[in-house]
Amino acid sequence: MKHKAGTLPVLLVDDEPNILKVSQLTLQSKGIRDVIALDDSRGLLALLARQEVGVIVLDLFMPHLSGLDLLPKINRDYPHIPIIVMTAVDATQTAVDCMKAGAFDYLVKPVDSSRLVATVKKAIDMRALSDELSTLKQYLLDDHLEHADAFSAILTTSKKMRAIFQYMEVVAKSRQPVLIVGETGVGKELFARAIHTLSNTGRDFVAVNVAGLDDAMFSDTLFGHRKGAFTGADQARDGLIARAAGGTLFLDEIGDLNESSQIKLLRLLQEMEYYPVGSDTVRKTDARIVLATNHDLQKQIAEGKFRNDLYYRLCAHQILIPPLRERPEDIRILLEYILEDAARSLGKKAPSYPPELVTLLETYSFPGNVRELQAMVHDAVTRHTGGVLSMERFRSVVGENRATALPSSPDGSGCNPLVDLFGRFPAISDVEEYMIAEAMKLAKGNQGIAASLLGITRQTLNKRLKSAV
Image 1 (cartoon, rainbow, N blue to C red):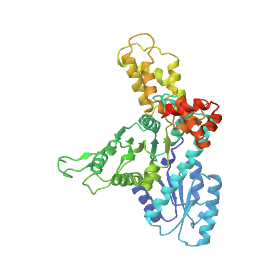
Image 2: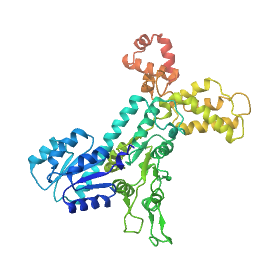
Image 3: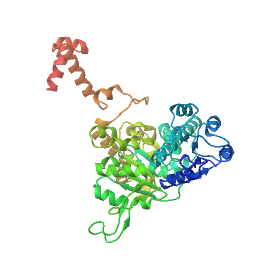
Image 4: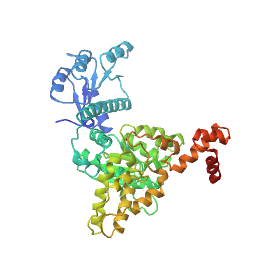
């Protein structure tokens, strides 16, 4: 059975039982529950042959078989396992030799408990990342989806989206937080639910939109409160993080959090612990935390609205959902599904639609993404009385918003010089005005020269200039 990287046990190898016991209890008290202690180094290689471990903490100087002898053998046969060396000898050359032999880190006894925990957690994260990269590479080479049914709610034929699904299957095995970034209406919660399904915990998916919550409301909503914590707190109440125990907590719109709430969120993500409002007793959580935003967080950092340290804590796993305008191949499948859904909700038969409707919709940028498409189709079906679905409502929406239409080139490359120049697909009159203005600039105001550049008569140019005034 293949373990998730974060669930593999940590193996402690030391001939001193007291050090083993203290180290084991220290790690377990900080949430690293699965810890194996081995006091006879002669059994190490046999143990590794029969059981997979995530990280090894290895004492260097032991009777029978020293860590110095074991280190190169482990690194040769199990190069994917990070090895943290512990020794009472504080010698630079020894440390250098260990690192050359493949050690992940080097700790000198007596080891400070916080340093031990931090180093082991860092090694666990490194191992998890290495495993994820290896798995993702294999997924992409094979174009493979192991659990396609987890994405059944996300309708797409896009290769971009399939690559994201492959990445999601890999990172779902980790317990690291996942940040989902995408414009309004792209379906960020659907992606969060897919991650929850892939995690296969069998526990609750708990979603909360944190936009608009002040710090007090944020703390109470997430962490709960003890009785008497504030006026009106007649009973103790668990927060949503407790409800999500063993499952997934989805925090939407985190880009709107104030700084105080960001600090509390950072502690939750780093330590997986929190304090209910009015309590000085820390609580642990094992909930998987998925977060989402429609903001550019790096821009918010530059503006002083989002904490750097929180952003980098969220960088481990990021999912960037492409907007609908970047995957026009999905328009048809989404249109057909929404038509059926809208007709069903209204007790109607789903209408057929003219083929040119898809072409029209593909020229529109959909600033509201799939949610906007849903609204457009539901409105059209509501107005529909019979026959083929009218394009009138769709034309009016696209026409009213023509300034945001056709954001990419017909070949799908994502580049369109006209859109780059005008910020939208221009009308003929827009292009004409632009060309006349540029020709007049080049001709330094001389209408005869400008007319020659444009290939028209001076009289025609003069008429155009007068009509533009």
